[in-house]
Image (tube, rainbow, N blue to C red; front, side):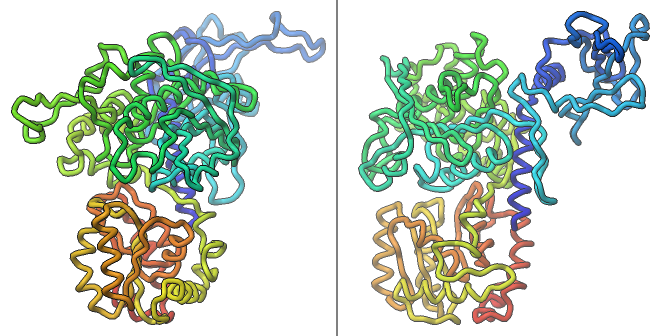
Length: 606
């Protein structure tokens, strides 16, 4: 299981390398080495000539003043396997040749120095190069660990990041992936709002200190003042944007009355702040600077690539930065009336990037023109790379059924669209050390899983029956998650000899249904309205089956947790749930659990 997590990090490393090197070969050469623009004179057969001054062994003096290497040439498109040839007029001058190192797709990913004769050791130029914010880091120990060639300045922009704020998978990913990337040598900043809702969750921001850096942002018809708070934890700079609009009861996006009406304003502030943070915040004594990779998550951060393109690069700022849009859920796009465009503080000529027109059938009345601004659409057309949280979802969003009106635009950008399955925090979700469960167990010894099941039945007040199949559900109570399908099938499911537990909150009608069902099936069903992290761990460990009938699921994390805990996911084949590797893992898990007290049912289910 751990090798899969490493594989996902390898996918991210490869993707970041490719994104950072997007552009022409000349850009890749200057990005990797930090050299000025190169000429074509000294290039032959794909090699770059590097002049240097030799030091006299006896006198210690150099052949030229200062002993500084001179660089000339450009990367040619010729076959790099051909022998390097110098210009005739320079054939007697000492120097190094710069050979290309390419990946499987032909992209230049590095260079190495080739001395004039074959008697010398090849020098890796990346050992001492860090002037461009790109440097070599040490290889990670262990056979299954990846070898990271370079490190980057990475800026995550997100509406939520666990443990500070979380409503679902977005918070989990933006809380764990930055830590994993930082552990591999990258400098990582996460920019997120500083939410205060008057509950115990406010304590999550206790250790974040005011940086004393206030900033005025011109948008929405005036100057909006924001402040920055900061906490350095697990190798990551956690930066929180503070503004009164983030201080209100409810979750990050709304309350019991629905979504907040000023969400466009709230997340516009976040995007402006995220663009300024690498330039002005002296974290650890110095700023991140302009050479960053921005990972913007969903529509809430969607204005970042638009701002980079329209307000920074025209003035020579962030010209070497790159932006990656990570789509966690395409159904939320940040659509508002067209009249709100002027509030965003963008140049008028950039309206077309965000312009959106609803089809006739979706308009409210005959005189409705359907004109709107779509923040996610703006991010799709301006970001350097597009990423979804599973390969299956990267294909689904290019179809009419899964594209939510953006399928044509996404299809037109297929060349820069990728899917990388989300990873999970294997430290937090580890049945052999999980502090929330009653008994620890592993794939080599599953006896503790039975104890977890018994403990869960006791806690929920269900009959203690280790041999009775226990089905679990954890998630939001809304249409996407297929809760209506569970409600329709519940009478038939509960007619069998099973037990069923559900944990979640959301649509009030489904919350009411859970309470009514528990009252009807007192010995078989439990409905926990709300969300509780320890309970979610205990349900994952104690259940035999995890039910996920999602209509669409960009990735899904609960099925990954379930497989790690030896619990069989029963899912709808969509998005990240239709992951082929899961089948292999599931087969291994089933083989391991044979002979246990619930073996008969698992064989039947398979």
